[in-house]
Length: 242
Image (cartoon, rainbow, N blue to C red; front, side):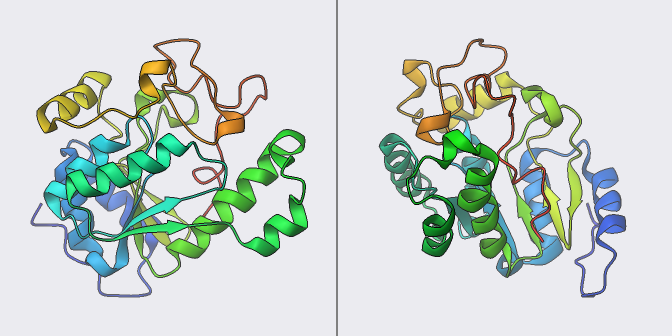
């Protein structure tokens, strides 16, 4: 890891740097990847984005063991389950997270595009844009890199994600790209992490209330998201955040 020198040039080629880091980190542990991200940018320029969903505690635990003061961005869409909001507060306390930033959509966007609060049904892509994509763009503005919890075993467009990739002007670290379901379970067990309250009810992947159902399969944990809509992603991982 000694070859991963911290970038000190604002004109760095993000695509090239992402390829270099991905090659160096492709077999690194999740903790090693987060530590490398921290060295690359410094804490003030690195953020972790978390949904505080059914598998979120594992990534947050690994991050907290590296540095619990790394900023964590949480998107409160206005449609989240109360159980998710409570779980956020539980994990903040349990893991000693010191900089969790709750970001909400702009009132002007909601008033313009979703005054009746039915956009999730008529245009779910636009609903995700004003409630997730645009707020995340604002939240990431001060940062040079961000960390997320996508995993290859989740399938779909996630099946071939690299460990590090370019996201516009930012680096994007995927420290859980290589982990398995058993790895996630082990982190929960060893860390004595509480499960998301809705997991026991069959909600294996939890997002916004109107667009989250119980999963059809233990093998496809995201099958309960946007059921019947031909949609598998909210947009924050398929649209550039800058």
